[in-house]
Image 1 (cartoon, helix red, strand yellow):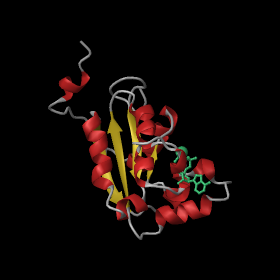
Image 2 (spheres, helix red, strand yellow):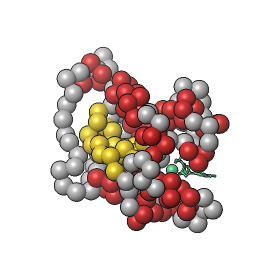
Image 3 (cartoon, helix red, strand yellow):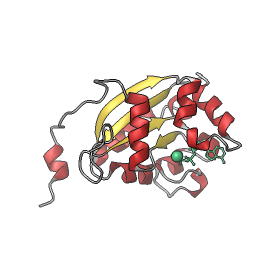
Image 4 (tube, protein in one colour):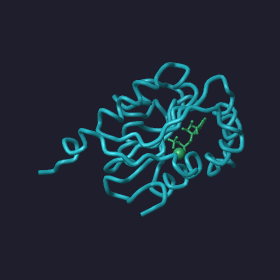
Length: 165
Ligand code: IDP
Ligand code: MG
Protein backbone atom coordinates (compact mmCIF):
# COMPACT_ATOMS: atom_id res chain seq x y z
CA UNK A 1 0.00 0.00 0.00
CA UNK A 2 1.40 3.36 -1.00
CA UNK A 3 1.21 6.30 1.36
CA UNK A 4 -1.08 8.44 -0.80
CA UNK A 5 -2.37 6.44 -3.76
CA UNK A 6 -3.88 3.55 -1.78
CA UNK A 7 -3.53 -0.02 -3.00
CA UNK A 8 -3.15 -0.51 -6.73
CA UNK A 9 -5.99 -2.44 -8.32
CA UNK A 10 -8.32 -2.21 -5.30
CA UNK A 11 -11.21 0.03 -4.32
CA UNK A 12 -8.73 2.11 -2.28
CA UNK A 13 -6.77 3.19 -5.37
CA UNK A 14 -6.46 6.97 -5.71
CA UNK A 15 -5.62 9.39 -8.51
CA UNK A 16 -4.81 13.08 -8.79
CA UNK A 17 -7.16 15.06 -11.03
CA UNK A 18 -6.72 18.78 -11.68
CA UNK A 19 -9.05 21.10 -13.56
CA UNK A 20 -6.75 23.59 -15.25
CA UNK A 21 -7.43 27.36 -15.31
CA UNK A 22 -9.23 27.20 -18.67
CA UNK A 23 -11.61 24.57 -17.33
CA UNK A 24 -12.28 26.68 -14.24
CA UNK A 25 -12.79 29.97 -16.06
CA UNK A 26 -15.06 28.28 -18.60
CA UNK A 27 -17.36 27.00 -15.83
CA UNK A 28 -16.64 23.29 -16.29
CA UNK A 29 -15.85 22.42 -12.66
CA UNK A 30 -19.36 21.20 -11.83
CA UNK A 31 -19.69 18.94 -14.87
CA UNK A 32 -16.27 17.39 -14.36
CA UNK A 33 -16.90 16.67 -10.67
CA UNK A 34 -20.32 15.29 -11.60
CA UNK A 35 -18.85 12.82 -14.04
CA UNK A 36 -16.56 11.31 -11.40
CA UNK A 37 -19.29 11.35 -8.74
CA UNK A 38 -21.90 9.76 -10.96
CA UNK A 39 -19.50 7.08 -12.15
CA UNK A 40 -19.17 5.95 -8.54
CA UNK A 41 -15.88 7.47 -7.49
CA UNK A 42 -15.27 9.02 -4.10
CA UNK A 43 -13.92 12.54 -3.58
CA UNK A 44 -11.27 12.42 -0.85
CA UNK A 45 -9.65 15.86 -1.32
CA UNK A 46 -10.36 19.09 -3.17
CA UNK A 47 -8.93 22.61 -3.19
CA UNK A 48 -8.83 25.64 -5.44
CA UNK A 49 -5.53 27.53 -5.72
CA UNK A 50 -3.19 29.45 -7.99
CA UNK A 51 -0.15 27.17 -7.98
CA UNK A 52 3.30 28.65 -7.41
CA UNK A 53 5.84 28.38 -10.22
CA UNK A 54 7.78 25.90 -8.13
CA UNK A 55 4.75 23.65 -7.64
CA UNK A 56 3.84 23.74 -11.33
CA UNK A 57 7.43 23.03 -12.39
CA UNK A 58 7.62 20.09 -9.98
CA UNK A 59 4.28 18.76 -11.15
CA UNK A 60 5.41 18.84 -14.79
CA UNK A 61 9.09 18.05 -14.09
CA UNK A 62 9.13 15.16 -16.58
CA UNK A 63 8.34 17.64 -19.38
CA UNK A 64 10.99 20.23 -18.45
CA UNK A 65 13.00 19.76 -21.66
CA UNK A 66 10.00 20.08 -23.98
CA UNK A 67 9.53 23.25 -26.04
CA UNK A 68 6.06 23.90 -24.59
CA UNK A 69 7.21 23.59 -20.93
CA UNK A 70 7.51 27.31 -20.17
CA UNK A 71 4.16 28.10 -21.78
CA UNK A 72 2.57 25.23 -19.87
CA UNK A 73 3.88 26.50 -16.53
CA UNK A 74 2.82 30.08 -17.39
CA UNK A 75 -0.69 28.86 -18.25
CA UNK A 76 -1.11 26.89 -15.03
CA UNK A 77 0.31 29.64 -12.78
CA UNK A 78 -1.03 32.80 -14.48
CA UNK A 79 -3.65 33.46 -11.80
CA UNK A 80 -6.21 34.51 -14.43
CA UNK A 81 -8.11 31.62 -12.87
CA UNK A 82 -7.16 29.07 -10.22
CA UNK A 83 -6.87 25.34 -10.72
CA UNK A 84 -9.12 22.89 -8.88
CA UNK A 85 -6.97 20.07 -7.51
CA UNK A 86 -8.68 16.86 -6.42
CA UNK A 87 -8.04 13.31 -5.30
CA UNK A 88 -10.56 10.66 -6.39
CA UNK A 89 -10.71 7.13 -5.04
CA UNK A 90 -12.18 3.86 -6.28
CA UNK A 91 -11.73 0.74 -8.34
CA UNK A 92 -9.30 1.24 -11.27
CA UNK A 93 -9.65 5.03 -10.85
CA UNK A 94 -6.21 5.86 -12.29
CA UNK A 95 -6.83 4.12 -15.61
CA UNK A 96 -10.54 4.96 -15.72
CA UNK A 97 -9.76 8.62 -15.00
CA UNK A 98 -7.47 8.75 -18.02
CA UNK A 99 -10.16 7.10 -20.16
CA UNK A 100 -12.81 9.57 -18.97
CA UNK A 101 -10.42 12.48 -19.68
CA UNK A 102 -9.42 11.33 -23.18
CA UNK A 103 -6.28 11.79 -25.29
CA UNK A 104 -3.83 14.63 -24.60
CA UNK A 105 -4.67 16.20 -27.96
CA UNK A 106 -8.42 16.86 -27.79
CA UNK A 107 -8.61 16.38 -31.55
CA UNK A 108 -7.67 12.72 -30.93
CA UNK A 109 -9.90 12.29 -27.87
CA UNK A 110 -12.81 9.86 -28.18
CA UNK A 111 -16.33 11.32 -28.35
CA UNK A 112 -17.90 11.69 -24.91
CA UNK A 113 -14.60 12.11 -23.11
CA UNK A 114 -14.05 15.29 -21.13
CA UNK A 115 -11.40 16.68 -23.49
CA UNK A 116 -13.40 15.79 -26.60
CA UNK A 117 -16.55 17.33 -25.20
CA UNK A 118 -15.00 20.61 -24.13
CA UNK A 119 -11.77 21.34 -25.99
CA UNK A 120 -10.01 21.51 -29.34
CA UNK A 121 -6.47 22.69 -28.44
CA UNK A 122 -3.66 20.57 -26.95
CA UNK A 123 -2.39 23.67 -25.11
CA UNK A 124 -5.82 24.25 -23.48
CA UNK A 125 -7.10 20.78 -22.77
CA UNK A 126 -8.78 21.78 -19.44
CA UNK A 127 -7.86 18.84 -17.21
CA UNK A 128 -4.99 16.73 -15.86
CA UNK A 129 -5.07 13.14 -14.57
CA UNK A 130 -2.27 10.93 -13.20
CA UNK A 131 -1.03 8.47 -15.82
CA UNK A 132 0.16 5.61 -13.56
CA UNK A 133 0.15 4.36 -9.99
CA UNK A 134 3.63 5.78 -9.33
CA UNK A 135 2.68 9.15 -10.83
CA UNK A 136 -0.50 9.23 -8.72
CA UNK A 137 1.56 8.57 -5.59
CA UNK A 138 3.97 11.40 -6.47
CA UNK A 139 1.31 13.91 -7.51
CA UNK A 140 -0.99 13.34 -4.51
CA UNK A 141 2.03 13.73 -2.23
CA UNK A 142 3.01 16.95 -4.00
CA UNK A 143 -0.44 18.60 -3.91
CA UNK A 144 -1.96 17.05 -0.77
CA UNK A 145 1.06 15.89 1.21
CA UNK A 146 0.25 17.52 4.55
CA UNK A 147 -1.30 15.36 7.28
CA UNK A 148 -5.09 15.35 7.28
CA UNK A 149 -5.59 16.51 3.69
CA UNK A 150 -7.09 13.21 2.51
CA UNK A 151 -10.40 12.02 3.98
CA UNK A 152 -11.21 8.35 4.62
CA UNK A 153 -14.97 7.94 4.42
CA UNK A 154 -17.67 5.71 2.98
CA UNK A 155 -20.41 7.12 0.76
CA UNK A 156 -23.95 6.04 1.70
CA UNK A 157 -24.35 4.32 -1.67
CA UNK A 158 -20.95 2.57 -1.63
CA UNK A 159 -22.34 -0.99 -1.43
CA UNK A 160 -24.72 -0.34 -4.32
CA UNK A 161 -21.83 0.84 -6.46
CA UNK A 162 -19.37 -1.88 -5.48
CA UNK A 163 -21.38 -5.14 -5.28
CA UNK A 164 -20.25 -7.82 -7.75
CA UNK A 165 -22.78 -10.51 -6.97
P1 IDP B 1 -1.43 14.46 -20.40
O1 IDP B 1 -1.94 15.72 -19.75
O2 IDP B 1 -2.47 13.83 -21.28
O3 IDP B 1 -0.87 13.48 -19.40
P2 IDP B 1 1.33 15.09 -21.11
O4 IDP B 1 2.08 14.54 -22.27
O5 IDP B 1 1.71 14.61 -19.75
O6 IDP B 1 -0.24 14.86 -21.39
O7 IDP B 1 1.47 16.67 -21.17
C1 IDP B 1 1.05 17.44 -20.08
C2 IDP B 1 0.32 18.66 -20.60
O8 IDP B 1 1.23 19.45 -21.36
C3 IDP B 1 -0.84 18.38 -21.56
O9 IDP B 1 -2.04 18.03 -20.91
C4 IDP B 1 -0.93 19.70 -22.27
O10 IDP B 1 -1.60 20.68 -21.46
C5 IDP B 1 0.52 20.11 -22.38
N1 IDP B 1 1.08 19.70 -23.68
C6 IDP B 1 1.46 18.46 -24.05
N2 IDP B 1 1.92 18.45 -25.32
C7 IDP B 1 1.81 19.73 -25.75
C8 IDP B 1 2.12 20.39 -26.98
O11 IDP B 1 2.59 19.79 -27.95
N3 IDP B 1 1.87 21.72 -27.04
C9 IDP B 1 1.36 22.43 -25.99
N4 IDP B 1 1.06 21.86 -24.82
C10 IDP B 1 1.28 20.53 -24.70
MG1 MG C 1 0.83 13.59 -18.20
